[in-house]
Length: 57
Image (tube, rainbow, N blue to C red):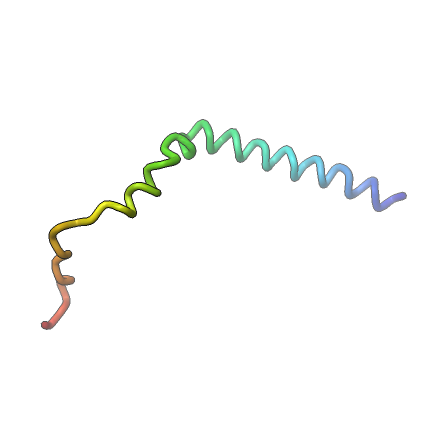
């Protein structure tokens, strides 16, 4: 029984902190553009990337 006295408040704390993190992410705009990343991968760049600055070739 004493184990439940520790586990129940711990579970409530973890659940509430997860809920708070979710609402924080919503307030910061993390879920605004759900399709953007999926569409960005399909964009084909016509020009190749320039070589890195320290590339000797």
